Structure formats: structure tokens, C-alpha cells
Length: 191
Image: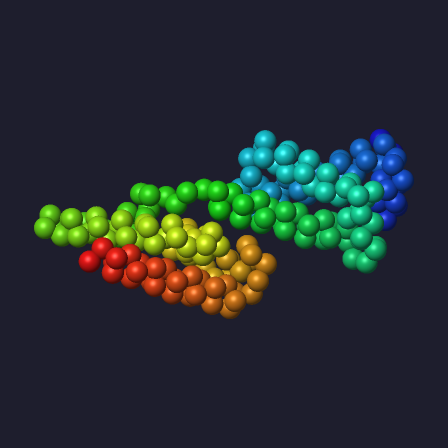
């Protein structure tokens, strides 16, 4: 395998369609991608391989447009880390949107072991809440899920979405406000 002293030298060779440079690139950066994906996003070994392949396709796409965008300022590993974090966050957001709400967690949040005479009212309230949640936009459901079911802090939610913690806190507040309105509508429609 060819040895490339600097990142710039390696990137230039990859962009020139050098097979040894491509092999050296994979050998140099696969451990970084694997380490971040496992430690920060809890990816499995198979998922890490898929992620690395997606990253390579993204970097190689459009005649190496993403690789050429790095101008040699700073370390390439930092540049690659930012791209990787955005890719992982997008994948997690997509997965969260496609994943249905955890019915058991929703039930635990709504009911706190009610008395038998209160059981019917509690079941009906949980049903109204579930319906109200289902009518929210996917982003609102995701925010509520992360904050109240996954117990993520606003700053963590902000990092996942690429926004500040304050903006994430406001987004969660707005999502809960919309949920309350829709819950009230469901209650009023059944009375």
C-alpha cells in the first residue's frame, strides 16, 4: 500500500482516481469512522460498515466534490468528523420518524396505577393523548419523544438537530403546546 505523508497528498491522489490512494484512504479513516459511530451513536459492526460505505459514496460522488471541498485548512479528520456526524444525525432522525411511538412507554407516562374506578377514564385519556400525538407533525413527535420518553436534555436534542440548546428548548415547548391544543380538541370532540 502506498504511503501518503499528508492528508492533502492523499486527497489529491484519491481525486486523481489512484487505486492505492483509495486503499490508503480507507485504511486511514475507517478506524476514525468506526470509533465515532460506535462511541457516539451506538452503531453495531454491520451498521458501521454500511455507514462507512455511505460516507465513501458521498465523498466520491460528483467527481469527489466533497473531498475537493476540503481546502487543506485544518485537519482532514476534523472535516471528515463533521460530515460523519451530520450523516449519523440524519440517519437517526430518519429512523426516529419511521419508528412508531413506544406504546408501553406512552401508557406508563399517562397512567400511574389508577384505582379501578378511574381505569376507564385513564384508558380514555391515554387514547385521546395517543390520537393527539398521532396528529402532530413528525418533527414534533420526535421532539416530544426525545425529551419525555428518551429523557434527552434540550442541549442534547440541539446537538442531534444541529441547533442551539435554547432553540431546541423552544422547539420542544412549541411541540408540547401544539400537543395540548390537539389533546383538548380530542377531548372536546368526544364530550
